[in-house]
Length: 480
Ligand code: BES
Ligand code: ZN
Ligand code: ZN
Image 1: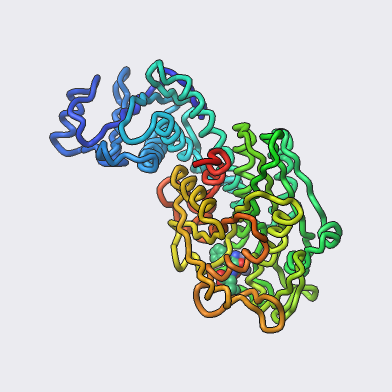
Image 2: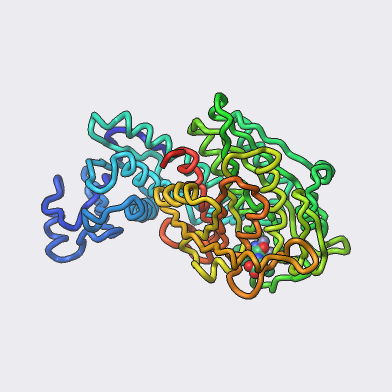
């Protein structure tokens, strides 16, 4: 779908609030629909009339005028896009006047995002494709004095959605093809041309770096680990750097603490953190944000073989801390321990966000709605939470009392990798904290939000691309 600024389109989308009295050009039709309660303007409600030759319309309900949010707008326009696709409409126009609750550029972004969201499907492996985006052109009509602002908003949301869709595609790809090597290849393919530096370190170099915890996890697999380091330098004059560390398990069988079949078939999605880092850096680079952002991904598989690590193993780490492996399925934190240390110690990042499908416990606590967070820095946490609000990707901070820290102490090593009974999402996060030194850091547990068993609003079944949008807005608004 091309997004154009100006008037045009075979079908006109007409946004309608609940209290709207008269709708221009379709006064009679609207009066009838309202009287008969066929269309009331509830948020997300649709009514299409594309029979007439010269006045084809799609009414889109926006609900109460004073309750309008970016999120409700995205959802309504996602539905509109789906409907238009069903009707095989090829071009569409929409006027965006000034809405009271949200700023003009937020409104433009939400409308365009909703329409773009309606196009996504992962049908690469399906012969009989059902998701065939029909809309070739969308025309966004705005008041004259808003044109410049609107143009920027359109470009921005287009770049953001490219990152979101890239992350989804990477996650939806099965583990048979999305190996650590393929993930590294994809990072290069998607980012190099944008002037982003992508360095790949193989097994021997990872050994030289002393990343013993990461390597231990990778031992059982015949696919070599790949450490992917992505450097975007949007502000060369500054030394300040934000590190995004993504969990990159291209498959998590659980290792010798093997997962039951029902919990294993979606574990190609255990690299959703890594995918969100690649996707976000793509959006950031395309938008040419003035920030320095480094992505770090310790990619590997957690498998079973004669070489695999075992329950009870005591392993080292790049930081020097030792870890008792009480469960081989708590592998993400081991790979992240070394990736975080690399970000904090080797690269001396000024702030670190890690993004990980880390625990089933986080899904128990928050379901698929909120991403769970743990932090050592309230200021950074506030920025991340606000970026999540702008993005429509809610984040909920979990507590981090010292008592929880007792639970990850080891009996025969410095740390253990499972914590105690209960609070699994918290102890997993606090385990990571051991490897960030004093760097301001936020951990995002996306186990529940990055992958869905069934579609929810504009988020499709399978990979959602969460939290690419949040990471983009965080990088953009250093002072939000
Ligand atoms: N990748 C899983 C977490 C996960 C579960 C992500 C479900 C998405 C959906 C992680 O490696 C894991 O297995 N964690 C264990 C930790 C436990 C053994 C301490 C878990 O959550 O059960
Ligand atoms: Zn696991
Ligand atoms: Zn895992």
